[in-house]
Image (cartoon, rainbow, N blue to C red; front, side, top):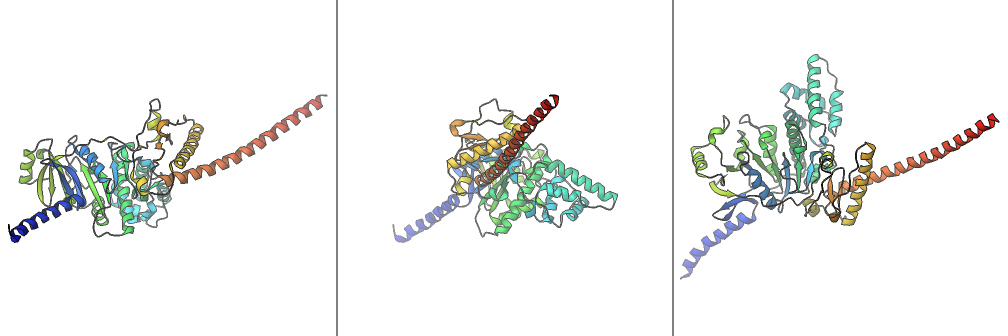
Length: 468
């Protein structure tokens, strides 16, 4: 074989190798197999996973999480608690949302969307909060409550805004875990402890807005992915009503410029224009059951009719490909923090936690060793137990001594795997200061008790002398 023939073979071979290297080493994620070979979808766009309930979407996402968190920071907005333990898991009450970092105009749009306000109410809300001076929902509610109105219509609008805000936001933004912490490590935010859809929609929207402002301050990146946000039940926050962009659609689209990719998991096909900017994994669905206004091409309908319930279609700029989607084969291995009542109801059962490495331990290298973490957690647990006793509640007990797991106000934290060390250390310092004050008060009360005893003793002697 001459040199020209060898070159003719080598050039296409090198192109194939380069193409495969780009596919497997670039920003992408495996969504299934095709001819027994892993099939990857590029993360050059957001990803939308669509299909009916119990169609395999959550199983696919669980399998994807295992791959994604090895390369990127992963945050999951978990509406039903399906992903608890796959990554360090937090209730919404643990998240601290600093409203001061969200501009008034954006906050007005987010609150208007989350609370379902009409245009006049949103404009009035903006007038109430446009000068800032609030950091929490308590501050915001006080600010709105103190706003002076001049007409009956304004008074009714103000009352309606306050009622919806207090109803939906009373348990939001009071935790110790900042949004910035979510940029440092993997986390599942468990929204299942919120009882109404307005609360879940509002929390999801606020977290999106906080992420958006955080990355805006950090600046654009030329290429690459650094953060993946997974949103379950995404049909609840996407614009399902028409082709225009909602504030949430706008934020999601803008976040792509800052290296964040969103994986939208939905059991309904949205009419939102955001789908034009997504790669799509489509599970088998009956086109006749789609909402009005959602139309599939004839080619896509034909391909849907050809696949089984064990298959899915991947739609990218390259075309439509049939794959066999991944199924989750992993078990929860990370710490789960739940609310006080959740674990108190299960206090008669043995609580165990098998804890693996998590993103925060990998990314937050603050030099705290396991023994120090255990001391911190134990002190915090003791203090919170004492608070429970004062409130008339049964104190929480330490569980799972084999793994050195301790319970913090209904939360399981394991030795050597503290999720948010810095916040725990700050809380421990506050507890230590509180203990010092309590000890001082106890010393004063003890001295007062001795003084009272002496007074009573002297009073008794005086009474005896008077009888004599």
